[in-house]
Length: 308
Image 1 (cartoon, rainbow, N blue to C red):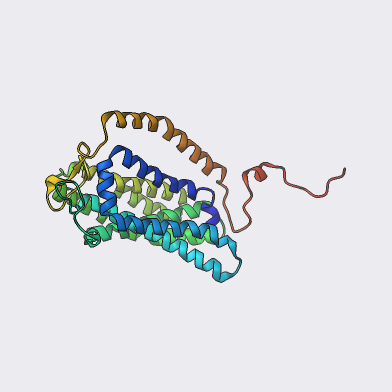
Image 2 (image 1 turned 180 degrees about the horizontal axis):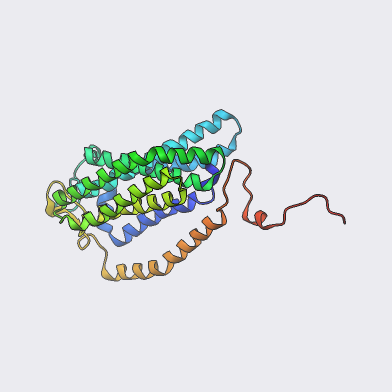
């Protein structure tokens, strides 16, 4: 499991740093309010991510079963914890948090937890676990591959049911808390729900590749539903709706946004192509043996002693 994601996990996490920097540059007011209001939650997310990173690096430093088991559990706790916090944080953008007239967060850490936001965190954890099981069924072989496919089948129904319920709840929250019409957030919600249903069907049929694709689309659909429900706001105020942050009152200058758009349009496709190539190079299934590097894999295999 560690070998299957070893060459790519650090590149994936860089996108989180990029997202934070881009938010600060494009929407400084939103960044300031969100990172101050969600300070403890984001600190917890960073803690879980650090634990996850350390688990990748330190597990291989010892050979004892207890040492390796410790860091495997650390990886599990770090991955699940970060997913839970991200789900709670994103849901709070739409549900609303206390924001005063100056755009400052005026609540406390407990204000971030409600039935809707906690349910959102649980759904995100289950969805990512489903997505990860499908990934492992593509990248591993033997007993682990079979176990991964079985886990995907077991998660399929709960994830589909929970995901659809969360999407419907999100549309209702968007209408009630953000004065949105039903149609806007309902379109991505329906598409994401269909993707979850199709993913569940593919999982039971043993189609790992299609399951992985559908869970990826469902994840995109969940995010699209939240931000479509938010528009034209980026953060809803629960104390006074007039204090909500919008794309106009929270953004940088037009020139800064224009420069960022041009840079992103040029560089993001290059980075995506590079990451796609990385996945292509390390596409071979792993089964617990020592992983051969790309250069070593391209070299001719030795067929025995060679005569001089």
